[in-house]
Image (cartoon, rainbow, N blue to C red; front, side, top):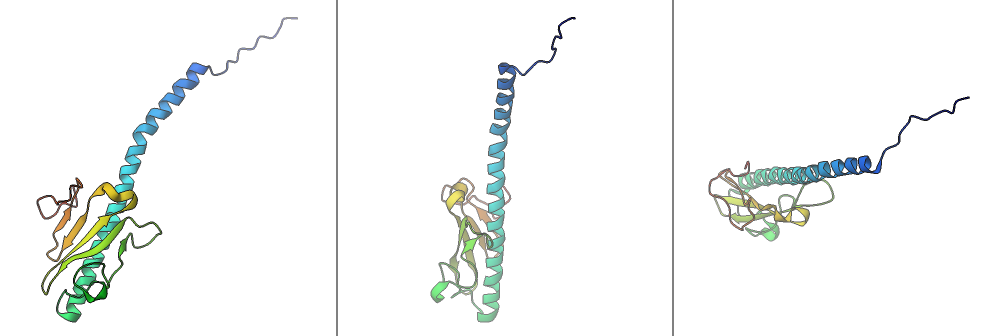
Amino acid sequence: MKPIISTSRGVTLIELMIVVAIVGIIAAIAYPSYQEYGDRTRRADAQGALMGLASAMERHYSVNNTYEGAAAGGSDTGSPAIYATEAPLDGNTKFYDLTIQSADANSFTVRATPKGGQAGDGMLELDSTGARRWDSNNAGGFETGENTWDK
């Protein structure tokens, strides 16, 4: 009787290390893209919240014939009394503070300031003319132009 010779082979350590390296490379590429996607999603939530705050400012104007007095305590600037103070509006973790930056009889500017995990993303602003500004480089100043949210 002839002995039975097994022809099956296992995975070598080198093959396993190659697979682990490939998975590591894929993860190193995918994770930053995932993080950027999360940042863009949270920024879009803040933009929607600013649009909602602007609508609330317009409702306030239609009742009072002025944009003044829409902030907490009846003042002209600060946290809004007529709308939510943080974004996103639903969910537990808040990534932006909403404020009324300026308000007078005929115009207003509202701002979303990032906080927490969104802190380095730059402020968003919307004014009564519909101009949308984003401090995309987080330098404390807004880019020139009126509609920089889409950059």
